[in-house]
Image (cartoon, rainbow, N blue to C red; front, side, top):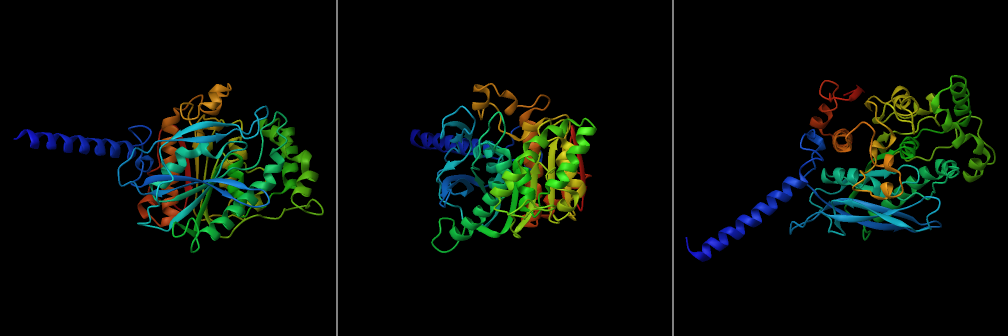
Length: 409
């Protein structure tokens, strides 16, 4: 072999090895033993920050299938909006991710189903980039709004968020409708008729509300009275909203607090929801039964933020969906759904290590399982993927440390 041919051969081999290494990286899970749908999909991931203008602007991040003709490494540092008492307004930290900023849309299989992702109370929208990126790699578009709220020691923004968050989801719907038309920034990218809403903690509440469940403060008061009598540790949640019913009524622009169900802020196009450690205690059983679309409710069985019996278990028991699943991470805490500490260092910097790790679970393994179940569920419900639906069968959805129940799969 001539020197020239040898050099050319070596260059080709180096390029091939680089592409293969990148493909191996992007096609893997957080761990080598990731289950089927915990492995990253075939689409490159792009991301853009956009602003929904209005009386109160709403910042959103959009993740989408992207073009990557030059096989660029999908690495990015997202801004993380800090909404904590004591930090100046507009303060940010960082989240490390795997995406291409402002990449061109990959329209090869567009329009893609829409997944609206609602973060936990006072959490920045990019804290769930790991999940958004994974879903996009399997052919979805994910939009996450930056809800207007602040974490304070008094938790006095929580009741506000109960009213404003479902309205934020409707704002996202209006924006998508406008921007998927001719000349819009999302033209041809999203199918606005095929939609799921997912969320963590109060974001899980937001998903339930977006699916049509009405809050019911009278029912919640009765639940809280029973909880106090039983010394239920979940009773602390009652102080987040019940003392503020008058303020909630005014914020909702109601003349008086409803004696029963409150108005719903929902869109009938929501086809499926995934509440993760989602607050369900604001709804009474009849209100949850208003939800008849597919539901995947997940949580940690030792969660002290949204106790399992007030969140995932209550959801699974009472929604009237023909297809529903309940997944419990045994002995896990509330923040198992957040980014890891190496990805979101802000939590460690402020001494909130429990915000980015779990006291029992390896977060990488948990994230692989969350990715697996969420992806399989959304592929099944939004794309009609029968193989993905089969993966949700109780006979196949068996993993150490996971309790699982399903109906209709």
